[in-house]
Image (cartoon, rainbow, N blue to C red; front, top):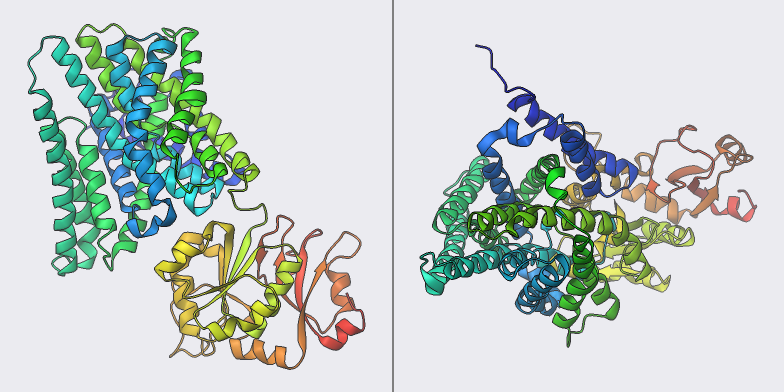
Amino acid sequence: MALETAAGTIGLIPAVAAVGLLGVGSQWLAWRLQLPAIVLMLVAGILVGPVFGLLQPAAEFGPMLSPLIGLAVAIILFEGGLTLNLHELGDAKAGVWRLVIIGAPLGWLLSALALHFGAGLGWEASAVFGGIMIVTGPTVIAPLLRQARLQKRPAALLQWEAIVNDPIGAMAAVAAFYVVLGHSGLETGGAFDLLWRMGFAGLLGFGAGIGVVKLFREGRIPEYMKVPVLFAAVLVAFALSDTVLHESGLLAVTVMGLVIANADLPSYEELRRFKEHATVLLVSGVFILLAASLDFGALGQLTWRAVIFVALVVLVARPLTVLVSLIGTSIPRNERLLIAFTGPRGVVLVAVAGLFGQRLEELGVQDGALVGPLAFVLVAVTVVLHGFTLTPIARMLGLAGGDAPGVLLVGGSRASTAFAEVLKKAEIPVLITDPNHQHLVRARSAGLPTYYGDILAEAAENSVEFLTYRVIVAMTDNDAYNTLVTTDLAPEFGRDNVWQLERARDKEARHAIRTQLGAQRIGQGRSFAALEQLMVEGWVFGITKLTEEFGFDQWREKNPDAQVFARISRAGVLSFPNEDTKTFAAGSRLITLRRKEQVAAGQA
């Protein structure tokens, strides 16, 4: 039977496909062009929605649009809760709690003042909308942090604040709305009833998290069903809590994620990575839907006071909230300034503000009609502003990874130390790690940065600035450990950026491992023992820059016995290609292995 669609719509299935294509396509294009993904998604949604009218979410999805966005936000917040491991907070703990305990109510107050005196809203609408503005948007912060490569502490502060304050902002809006209802003479359960329902949401999330942990830890759920069970539990907790008190489901799922994140489950990493992939899809989809739903007519209701309102939020309310909250902490000045001027708003603000704006209108609060348009303007301005300024400001303040992608070498051998010295000479940030203290003596003597400990240990997450490094090279004498390290870190760094030495017995069918394990090989097929033997025989690492006049062919002619070990591209990215002249373009640098006598003879 043919499916009929309403006039001017493309149909539900094509609409879902279009949202997926635009969302993921925007993220991919942003990665290729090194632009903020959030900005491209916002532009794509506006173009296909209100500009060209190709996608009309309200017509395509009908009454299911709002619930679908609500469920997507719930899953995004749950995944955010899964990243909130208390053990990883380190020296950011005091700052996080201050941004929540002091920052949330102070931000509510200052936002309400900005709305009243800046946008000209009445106190009722200002109180409700001000509560929602506590949120800084984990849907926006996560892509921005991924792009900016911030240092660990400021990144943790921004991430935790965004995730924890998101449900708090929704609850604050609910509390303010209850007060407005009371002033309107409508019957409510009072403050005690509101607190009871909020408490129920928190306890429900805690209980759901404990239940999932118990089932997983006792082996009552088979491995292949853990992700489906987790998804079902999240949806049930969200729906049940939201039934008791609207918008409290966000609090329940955040608490649930926090409990599971701190339960030290063996399968936690697999669960978190799967949820990350789902969240990328959901963030993309929600942003496209909200941008495509924009009504230019509603924006036309705004006046010049909207500009004053946005300026007050970005330049006064947000900085004051952060700077006052962090008074007395050990957080350095530059980190405080970066956090103070980084407050993008996202999906939750638009979705919740639109809902409460409608409800305020129904109560006869005329300013309610301006809540939704103001929310969208604030989100659009802050997303574009922080999307383009976070990275340069972080670099200016010395809080972001350098332009040159760093290299993390696992294993403190003779060869890895010599290789690290060449990388340092090429001004590539490098760090040598090894769980054996003796293996690092040579590297320390050479003045190279080192880390003593297992790179996979929890302590390494708190001590090593992983964002500084883009490439992982495993060069220990233990083939199994090299494989373990690269297999574990490949999803985080990308398989194109993870390398290891050839396994000694990889060519034997009985000992060969699956291609899904380990990483790309380096050293032209040499094992650890073979590479170390070259060092003993007097081979040394060298570096040569190729030019238009002195290309690879000329270099090879002058160095017939030398061996290409690695290449540094013009962008400073390290790789280990096979010897192919097409790979070595002018401007790239070769890291080579040569006999010491060749170096003494002055060969390039």
